[in-house]
Image 1 (cartoon, rainbow, N blue to C red):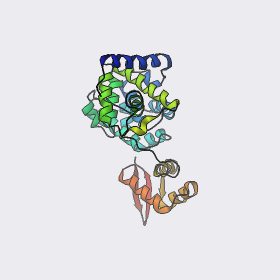
Image 2: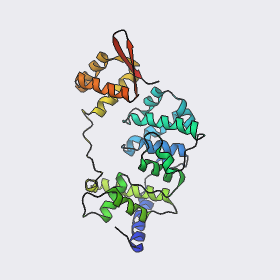
Image 3: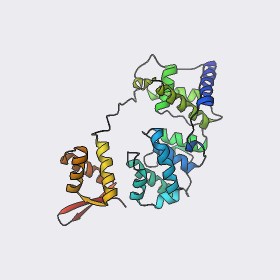
Length: 281
């Protein structure tokens, strides 16, 4: 879809008018510290801002820079991360910190392709880090941005590809101030959702998330929480705890434990005939 210059001007005006009156305030928007922004962008993957706000402050207070995060023990990182879910992100974040410290002299690369080489950093996250940390006019879409473009430009279409949305993002970006532009754009998308306007199902990327209760995600988080509390547990102990609290079957719990071992979030140690599990140190 090709926009006229007038359409672009009107669109930018609409977005900025809303933002100038109703723009949201977050701690990570009040800094240009690349480390703080990097942490916030990883936390915001698949997680609502309300849940991130408190945890973000706690995390950067505990690990104030890449060096402190890089040298921390994983179980310390996971302890602070508790409550955000998707614990692999915490491991990826620490691994990224280690790479940045040892391969990039403690400074985040301001190149999107280099950012994408860091663990757990995909194309959209790499572009968003570059935009927010370095004010670079990168092009990306995320959930709120998809909602804006679909609602205002493509509301009569279905099965909309990100390629089409990225084209609109590229045409309409404010290249003089991409950081503020993306703040404004995401806030407008958040407003749409609060008002019951959520056209995301029209996107090819739409994938309705299954309920958290009873999911593998819930069991994974519960296993990590148990190991944070008890340091070391065998299968029977973990199964007994989770069967009572989550009504999860032992075979399912065992499978998820082994997945966590394969992901190197959990360590397996054989003592006699029993296997004991603990968090990676």
